[in-house]
Length: 385
Image (cartoon, rainbow, N blue to C red; front, side):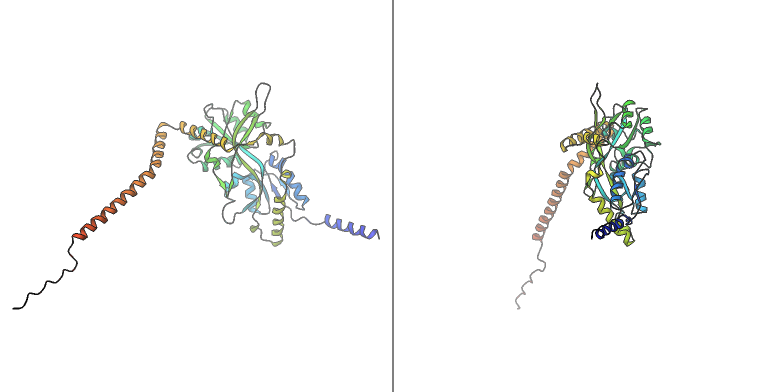
């Protein structure tokens, strides 16, 4: 009597252990040493294996390549920056090819770096974009894609950047950008002050330029913001000085996959829907890096209040305005004055039009009164003799 239940239990456990995985494919990340591959992906991979999905972390060149892989095979998964997904247009339309499964609190931030002491805000950067030289990471990188996105959202500022050069990696871009006063680089990075790149900027005599502007914070995907204004620490405190902080725009890290509608096999479609439901049900703390890895800079990164953000936006706008040439400022002032006067001009035109129409009607009435009747009354016949 005691053996039968035991054998039945063993048989059930054996069957569960040998049950096939739903399907096996890739979680596309980034560079082998990067945070996507080394920190975030292993946690997701472990959770999916527990749920009987045989997914494996696979390195790539970053978000742009991850999007291409997911579009080629909708069952694949990718890590990426939300701004690049917006730039590529894969979340728009009635039938987008990609769906976001996770959007947690992890955000990558935009850092502009130069040694030019006159460039202290994004307004300075945007107003002088046509004269500056931009040295950027490779074209396939997330940093380069973010730069392209900023050009599209700010065509009158960064959109005028003409001298753009790409180099082999972010470290080289930083070194070259800090070699002259007319050079700038922009890269996307998790805000960890212990990162060697942040130390490189400080060691080379460069400074961080806040990437904050109304044009940058305005874009959305659906009803979701793409960039958030955050205060981040870029240098640790020492015995002689306090830690250095910079306010900049940060974009969420997302986990995405192909839209279920693009999976044609019925069995694979059911597995894919189960995958999406499984990933979305994971707790936030499960997806975030463990204590001791990124916990330090999460605590040092703070989203700004609306009032503080507004002050920074005004500072950037004023800097952009002052940096423009005199003629350009006069032209913009004239355009603003005309725009401000348009309502009054339009109202005056409408009133003038109304008065003219009224005068026409009154004149018509007067003319009508002075006219003989349309049919004159017949004269009475003279009496016959």
